[in-house]
Image: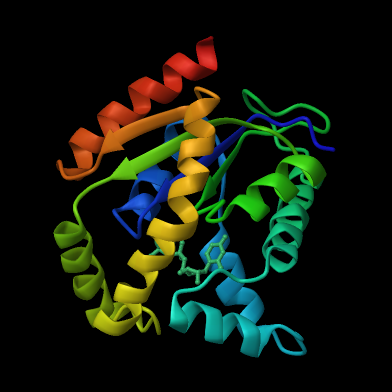
Length: 203
Ligand code: UDP
Ligand code: MG
């Protein structure tokens, strides 16, 4: 088990997680891993046995079986640790990870905490469905993503309500959730996130 300080970022759908994560990497030297990006890379990897499964899940807005996602994260984290990075929070076998868009379902959360490590906090970016829909459709104009369309988005909102909300409630019961309203501007959301993470890291 990697004894690493971990941060998970959850949001109903892209409320600007990717943008905020890039800023947090600069602020605190995190290794940023996006579960969705790792899945998309695996989907397109030649010889992958999961390509079709991942594609279907993403399009249908359902959660890819946890074994696949947890393994991809575990491998990516091990690779980052093997780089022997320097900087605050990075020592032998220990790193500072910002995991974006994960865990989306309770079984993943349990497997990850059992196999890989404990999250020190969960950043929860919230906003209204209207704002999210607008942001996703806007992103869809250029993203080329198979799930940035009205039909997939509706399914993703549903999955979120049924499977991801219980994960947030679980971490809330452990006092680990930092909720940030992401309706505000990118800079405003960044300032609030930065302050909360700084406080956590200094505790
Ligand atoms: N996904 C998954 N397990 C995860 C994270 C993502 O199965 O742990 C799949 C799921 O189908 C989700 C899609 O990947 O709807 C896109 O997730 P991503 O976080 O990239 O979406 P974003 O929030 O950036 O729009
Ligand atoms: Mg994203």
